[in-house]
Amino acid sequence: MGSGNAGASNVTSELGWKYGILTGVLDVLKAYIPSQLVLNIYSESFHTLDMMVLAGTGAILGHIYPFILDFRGGKGVACYIGMLLAINWQIGLIVIIGLILLTIITDFVSIGSITLYIFIPILAYISGEYSDIAIRCTVVLCIVGIIKHWINIQRMLNGTETGLRSVFKKNKTK
Image (cartoon, rainbow, N blue to C red; front, top):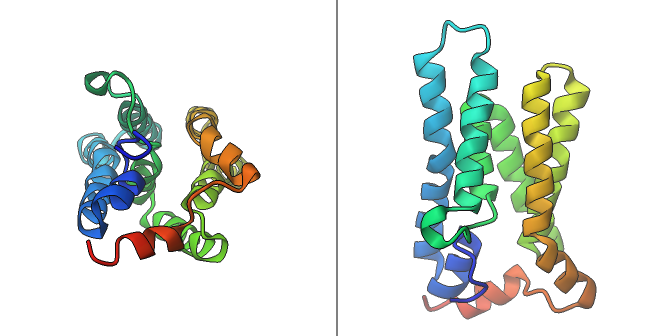
């Protein structure tokens, strides 16, 4: 249906806001729960943050490439937010606000999504607060995220990408 993507943006576009928001919340929880579980189980460990990032990265990649859907899932943005919320809720909240603002300003959800994928590894590296494992995980997610958004990038360059305002108009009655 729609783009064939199993993520919240496509569900919103095709089925309306109610199902899109539900899908988004469930996608956030897909990475939040495993990351938070690691924190609760291994809170005394020296490498808790690394384990949280590894658990979240696994959940995000599992969302993007689910074997049960022939490895065709979502683009991982809501899951990424879930991991960030588990690791540091303030960063997660800033990312959510940034995504909303970029989407409103540009009319494209994918601009905010791509910015997230690029910005997080840079922030992790520059801050000096994260290990090589955490930085490498965010770089892998950046590469995968850009690949998953490649069609959106091409459509934006060609002027054929559907903007958020079009989705609002389409889903007024849904």
